[in-house]
Image (cartoon, rainbow, N blue to C red; front, side, top):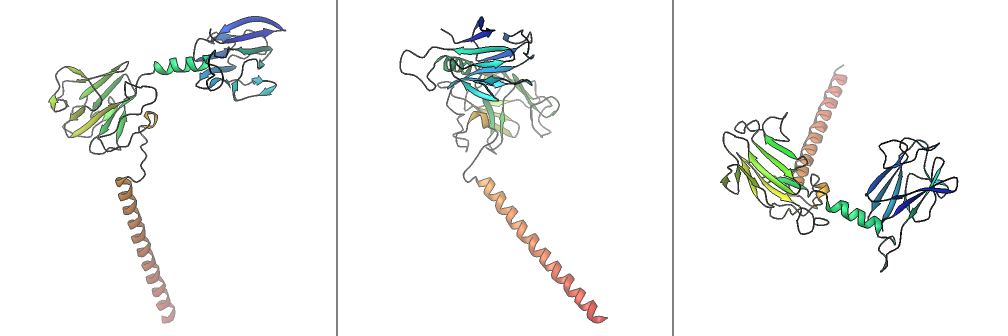
Length: 289
């Protein structure tokens, strides 16, 4: 049985709204999921979201949303709590699980959250073999690689690369790579690409001098397993932060830091020497007078 929002007006129940989506928008607007066409209700009032540990209510209004008499910005909602939107009162109806309770004591929100998560496409990226910190998330359904910055998501500054060299097309959790009639071709695992091919985790994609490793979240456990960066010199990372690789002691970062520190010391020494020379010259001039 899905959770519900019980809507009351002047003490009478006017609707029991089934919560069948992980996020519902509440307000007077025709685009809202739960439409409250009553005085004091704004076009958009609140957004109810199903999360891992329960239902959360977010105020998106100018007029304010109140839970148990207090204005909220974001708050987890327990069954029976009074929600006030303008002149309308609401309350959450949910049944506790028959077996041992999960975090929060109710399963409806978690089930909606898990269903939404399972439908999310698996994240993927191209990781440079030469520079493992250079990772490019494939965030579009069509991801073009080439030399033209106006048409390509991944731009390769190499004159031998075609303007639009290759394209990765995403269809759900499948990523298809196709060569776009480039002058020098696209290679996957050392073989020149003819037509299109579905990329698998660990595949090596070579375009002229640029070599990338294709990585995607494991199909075995799309909920929790990070992108597998083993074999390309990167510790496993969260897919949400694939562009922001963190290292305890990255060699590149250490080298850059050492160089910058050395440069700072040299600059400081030169500055001190110049100051000493200027002071010396000033003293000589003063004494000469």
